[in-house]
Image 1: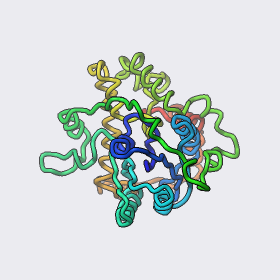
Image 2: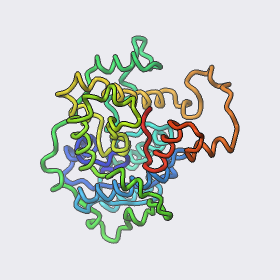
Image 3: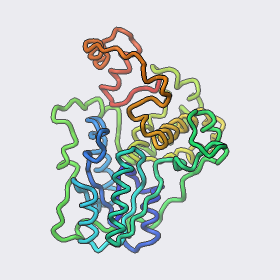
Image 4: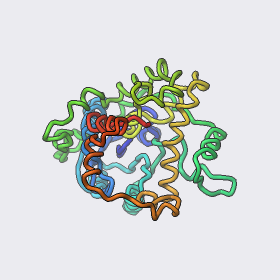
Length: 335
């Protein structure tokens, strides 16, 4: 069993590659369990994206993606028993709730005599691999990034050749309950999502096309263009990276022939890496400042001002433009 989560791609998928290298047949499984991500359950825009990303992954797998909803551990044990699977593979997540869930899942599967292995698909390096000279986690970005460059940014492995011929689907499990993206009810009932449809195509093919287009066009002006929110000179790869339709190693590989021009852009990929690094080593930063001196920061409590900000009605043009862009497209310019 390959347990898909936020790694919704077939290429550069270490868990899938490990399963294929050790087993004759692989059953792809996705479990929708937002309650296990609390307090960071996916919002409406994320659910919208997930709907189409699951549709796309299922299509890539020729309909052989088993989708379930419920308790991950219970479902994994059930599917393993019904399929006769001897192993479960997945790619790691790094939020505190996900780490706690995955630790329990791994222990319980192994206790049931099922091989349980996890890999890294989301990051260039595991958070515990990058340390300062004292062997401690970094707290400042610049020395962290220098250390990554010294280590050498990894690139994506070669593509699979016989992947689809070894995938088995839910039809091999008689009478198995399964879901569809539609039955998960991820799309909004009040259709506010026209801006999302206009702005995005949540597919692997679109991710590859956008990466190729960005490297061929905007990459060379990115260092200056990224500072201009009114100008479309950024990558727009963030949602593809978040859902794992594109991996960071694939981004590095695409930039390998343009490394000098890509320096500023790859540094931003480093900031994504650093955010995971901080959250892993300092999980309290989910709710509190890394620097305790900010604990007494004087927040303003003003319900009307908060609503004005949320609706893009503060009267400050740059702020309002960003919030309206977020509402319309689910995405906001970095600046």
